[in-house]
Amino acid sequence: MSDRDASIFESERELDEESVRRAQRAVASHSIDADDCRTLLSMLGIPLVPADSETLSGAAGAETV
Image (tube, rainbow, N blue to C red):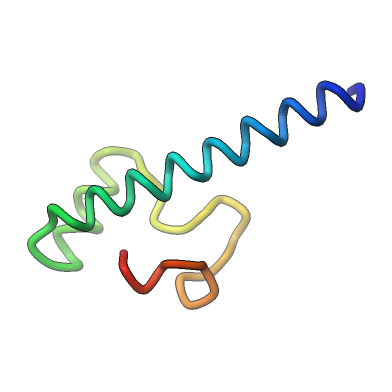
């Protein structure tokens, strides 16, 4: 993979992570409670934690999800 391709891939990954965070926040703001939020995230295929294996306690902004 060329440096340019790697740079494009990394940019898309960062955008994707930002999209996931926004989706998590949108779902959380419309959920009744934490269980409802987990269920909705699961139904929509939105991961509860970022793919790079951060834990909820270590993820930035996780306290609002």
